[in-house]
Length: 394
Image (cartoon, rainbow, N blue to C red; front, side, top):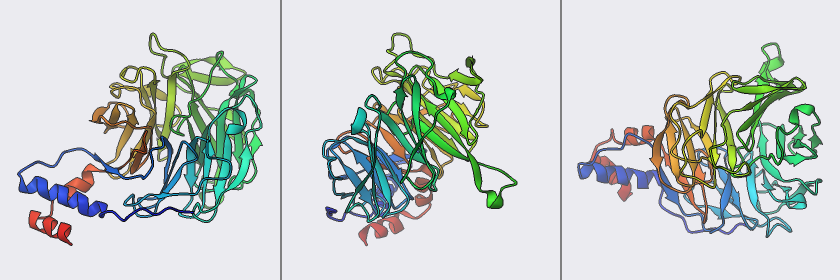
């Protein structure tokens, strides 16, 4: 069942009071976004986060933990633990609304599982268990409809890619030489559920602009970036290509930092905005302060370029901030913002983060925050201080 926590003050009210106090004291409103910490009610390490909208979001983490908010994070409800999942690590969560969601655990063999709920996480049903004893699931993504993809570490020399067309009830393994590994012991990362990105490809001749194909992008260890189209499977060229194998082009987009282990360094997150503008981030999680070769960008969803100015360390997650028209990247030593499409990055904060689904971020020890965009701060600053103070008193 859902365990309800006491109602907290309204985020907008707390924000308004903070702005009013700054105005009354003569302080300037910061010209950048800010993170506003929220009470999650758990100490679990959180890596799964999916915001359906600004009000509804789901989060997940260790020890079978799944959380849900219906009020923008004012309160987070602790969901019931799926059957047999008390020791599982839910690194991925996906939701369609406040009632329907899926949570995916990551672990060796049958510890990688997929559960679904249709009653707002009061009850769960086990949908699918990893059939590969030597496998490990890394990410779960849907295109916003019933088409979804699970990415898993290589099994017998090829990455595991499972596809559903019915909202996750049935899954089909994709077999293609384009999924083969490029080097021994290669793998993907389950740090943020963002190693994988799924993009619908729309045809001008299709009815109502319906998607006919899907672009699949995923990053791996040693900085390799894979990109192709499903149905039919067609490889998409990328810059910095290292050669073609069986007609498939692979790109080592973020070179492994000197002295780094191949199992600790690579591309951890790939995300897109408007289907063509994308960013990939990563680095070495064993050396989080190292900021070299940690980001790349694309302006056409085909050709990728290394960032000119990188984030201030290893980054496990990245997301587009619609309110400000910026990219946000985050990791264990803070977050960064890019105002030029991922070409350059500036520090935003020094918090400890694992994953983003804006406006929310999650991290270790139950850490959850909501992003208060600079545009929101600026809008609130247009009101007289007395009016803001009155809003706080209500």
